[in-house]
Image (cartoon, rainbow, N blue to C red; front, top):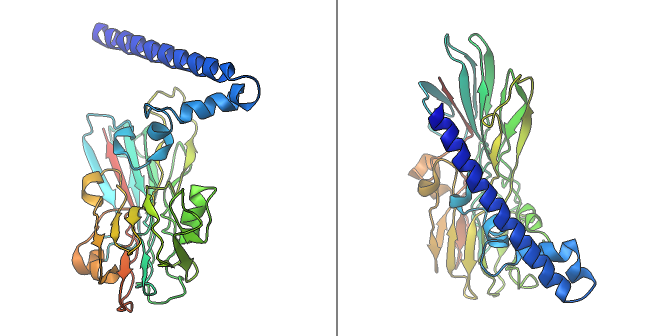
Length: 356
């Protein structure tokens, strides 16, 4: 107990120091804003803008600008787990759903539930010249709760679209389904599947033209979104780098926990769209977003010059690509024709349970 108290006091001292530093920073920003006179710059809104645009990168860049920065993902994992299981597609197609009931074994008093929503699909080979990006990833959720022997939890994993896209209508670029768990202490606990249409992608960015894939500084240029949000048609514009954009959400709450602790918190990491960069020759790259728990394995980054790839040919079933929960369908690129190949479905949802 002395060791625990000592550690807690040290943590408290560190937090007090951090709070003091943030307060001092706030006072400095407020003083700088006020020095410029009255009006918006001296307001709370002006102060907030100053914080978000800090030159040292600790404002907007650290908190909002790059959701794909995995160093900022903080999830309490617990320790000392003595058993576990996973629920996911075992058919070999890597896109279907699965469900089961888990009954808490004798002697188990604590459980951790991790959820991955199914990934969003990607369209068929796009118009020439054009591109259909990776499907967005499903959201991720994690929580630790107290349990009792004999309680039963129903676990259902999300299904990605069950077919490979082969239409220019964009109809197959659809969201993945949510993954959810129900049982004692859970109220509508789920992780949403990855999103579908490229119109949704652009609207998630906010304040940009939703009819084009475009850099923030060039949203009147870029490629036109076509085929009902299925892909984009290249128009010769250089739209530069577009970073990961947050997508699907985690939902739910906890109830009826008599003495909640810091563990009894639902940690959520939103689904994401890919990071990409293309120049005026339609050459560039695209990087699949990191999936929580599989960060290094899921950030594949194909580069594009001329030629055509990859869609169905790079599916998890056909070619062992992105066989991970919540991953999006594989991107396709078309230069000089050859845009008749199928697209790729998103990947399966999953639930992992650990207990002790």
